[in-house]
Length: 176
Image (cartoon, rainbow, N blue to C red; front, side):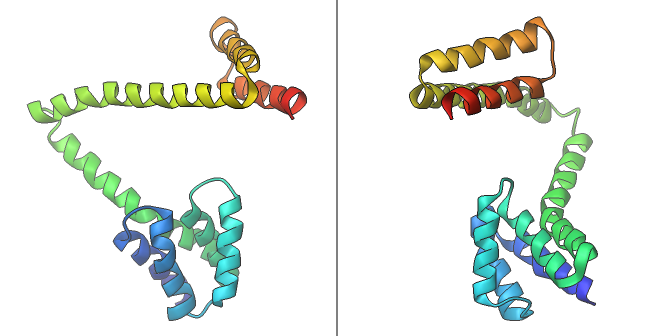
């Protein structure tokens, strides 16, 4: 029964909550602290603070930790799955609908507009990172990292992880 309770405690806030992690945190707190009593408000606040220090979506991290705290590894897996299940279900429905109407002119037109929009968004993101890097580290360091990364990726055809590791090492050694 504890697994079912864990599933509901994280599935319901994620299915009715809109706005991402920060918007559903109060809903999760209501379930975990108010409804089931698995944690005190103080423990929940500490879990939230710890979750905010780590990368990745906050709700998923909190679900994994709270699920583990309540019911071990199985509880962690179930709570984490319940957190991502609403998005997964929505994506399956959307993909099923797109697949069903894949020959429709409207769907084809919509699909043709997705790539340019993503390209513009990625270009803006790249420009923002470049601008921020140049502001924080200076144009010389930014140019060195960019030039070496381009050479690693295009000239030597290395996996992108090596370019990222180079940038991290360069920053740690020379900008630290």
